[in-house]
Length: 130
Image 1 (cartoon, rainbow, N blue to C red):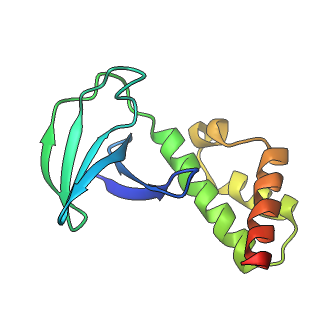
Image 2: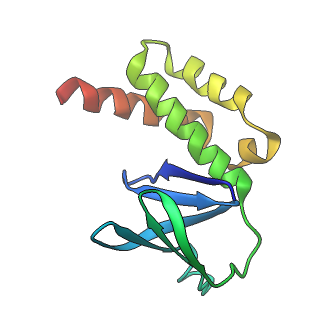
């Protein structure tokens, strides 16, 4: 099982397991209940329960093929945002570094260079006023 966490576009954690993204459904004490990101769109009933970032229970199977490329692209965008906040490199350079480091499947899922540059500029502006 390949478990990892990525940040969603809205700044919330997503659990990624074997190419499938899960979003937090609820949290009770130390247990976190996750549901498949495609639970509504594809009526996927896969669920996971974690305690302290380790899986304690997994219910149901995903009813679609996983998207490892999409998850890799999301991780690459996290790196882009981190690079943008910690350096003064040009947005084009930061975006090109992200494009070089990913596989072909993930590169197809990355936003366009113009959109990445806009994300970088927004991220830098937020840190200026924080």
